[in-house]
Length: 216
Image 1 (cartoon, rainbow, N blue to C red):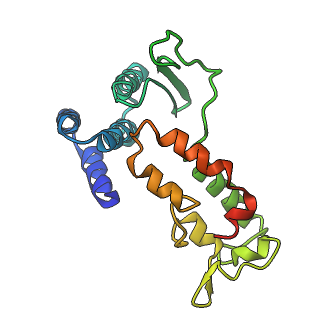
Image 2 (image 1 turned 90 degrees about the vertical axis):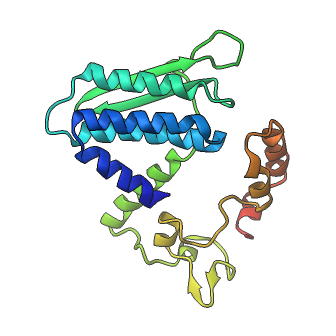
């Protein structure tokens, strides 16, 4: 999937204005026939493609064009079955673009605002990676350090055939750890469209604490 995205982005970035429009229109048409999960991936791809296309051009793109693209992606996002609101923030060449669409509660008028709080979600990966990179530059840790150096206690399970999980493994998602802990959560999230999913996850994590996490 990642390789396909990179090739598609490269093709888009190297295309002329008319060809870029044709490519993006083609992607939009594909969204009609794919599953809910893939439609969500498609929308993220669409926004990334719009930003890449404007970022790679040699000429300054009028701010109103990028704002209109973000508006369109936001409108598409809230049409998805499980989404009823979205907020998108982009900083492009010194200008801020902030768009809010939908309602915080389905069926109740009340759009999100600049003061709305969201769970950080996967943005935590970017934040953690940035903090780690800064720590490496400051020589406070090394990418090849055994993660157990920074943990209190002995964790023989955080190794495989004598090779420990290192800092670089955590940052590059190559540690071999499950996507979610405890592993039961992966089964629940297999169908994230199920309305029972939030309730079942809450039940799992109600009995799961820090000590359980380090017993992985």
